[in-house]
Amino acid sequence: MRTKRKFTAEFKAKVALEAIKEVETISTLAQKYQLHPTQINGWKKEFLENASSIFESKKSKKEEKSTNEEELYSKIGKLQVDFLKKALS
Image (tube, rainbow, N blue to C red):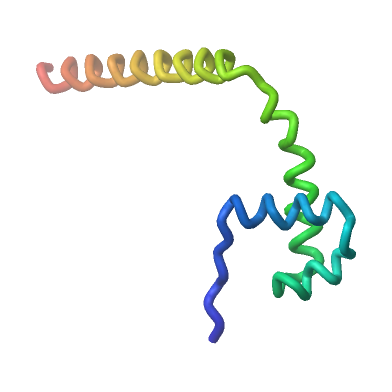
């Protein structure tokens, strides 16, 4: 039985960029990298959909992350208080 192959993000990006450049056909790339053409098209589509995230500001990502962390810490605090109330009752 064949094991499932795992590909790094760098490899996927490399193949997707080659597919976007259209220097070679998808079937040629598939033979070159021993992949199925559908796999390459999927990586190409995913790459194009997420390309705009490269230009998002790092500040907004950090702010979003800190907001999520604050919410999680407050929930943890509430759970601890509730647990202690039940334990002392």
